[in-house]
Amino acid sequence: MSEIIKPMEQQDLILETHGWVTHIIINRPPHNYTDIKLMKSLAEVFSELEKDLTKTRTIVLSSNGKSFSAGANFSQGGVGGTGDFEKDTREFYNYAAQVIKCKLPIVCAVQGAAIGAGLGLVMSCDFRICSQRAYFWAPFVHLGIHPGFALTSLLPNLLGLNNAAEILLTGEKINAQKALSLGIVKEIVDEANLLNHCLEFGQKIASGAPLALVETKATLRKKIFDELDNTLNHELTKQAALFKTKDALIGITASLKKEKPTFSAS
Image: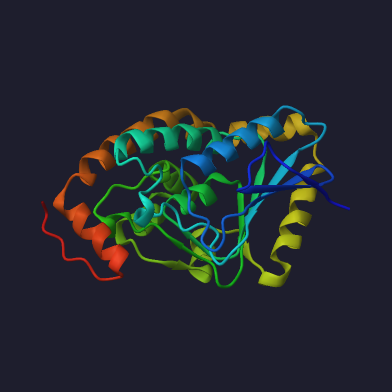
C-alpha cells in the first residue's frame, strides 16, 4: 500500500511512499513547465527527504501529463515572469543547484517530452527510464541563447563530450531509441508499465545500506557537484548576454509562432 503525503501545501507536487521509495509526481499537466515556484518546491521536498534515511532511501520522479516537462514557458514570461531575465534565472538556478545536488539516488520516469530545463531536470537524476513516445530536446541554439540548467556539465560528464556536443550544437530532438544509444536513458519501457518498472528499480536500489547509497552517489557525482556553481554562473552570464541580442528575439519569437528562425548574427 502506498501512502499519499501532502508536501508543505504545495499543489504542484504529489508525494507517495512505497516502503523506502518516495515517489514525487510533478503535477502541472499537460506540459509541466518549470519556473521558480516549481524548482523551489522540489528543492524543499528533496531537502526534507534527505533528513531521514530511515524513511526514504531512493526517489522516483515522474510527472502527470503529456510532457515530462517542456521547460520554461516563454509565452508566460519564462522561469520568473517579472521581466528581469537575469534576476529570475539566478533565483531559478539557486534552487536548481539544490535539486541537482540531491543526496538520494533518483530514478526518473520520462513518459513524454523533456525540453530545455525539463531536460536539465531529467539529467539531474541518476537513472532515466522512458516510454517509446518520450523525446529529449535542448533547443537553445535555435532560441538564440546559451544552454542552461548545468547541461553544459551534466551532458558531457554523463554522456561524453561528443554526444553532449551533438545534443547541444544541433539542437535536434532526440527520440527514445536514439536517447538509448546516446546513454540519456537506461532503457525504454512500455508506457503502461513505466511507473511500476521505475518503482521496482527504485526498490532494488533502496535495498542497499542507506549511508552507503548516499556516499556512493556523492563519489560518483563529485566532479559534477564540485563544478556546479561555476557552471551555473557561467551559463547565466552567457544566457543573460545573449538574451539581449537580436538573434534571441528572433529565435524566441519564432519558437512561440512555431516558425523556423532566420538569424542575423547580431
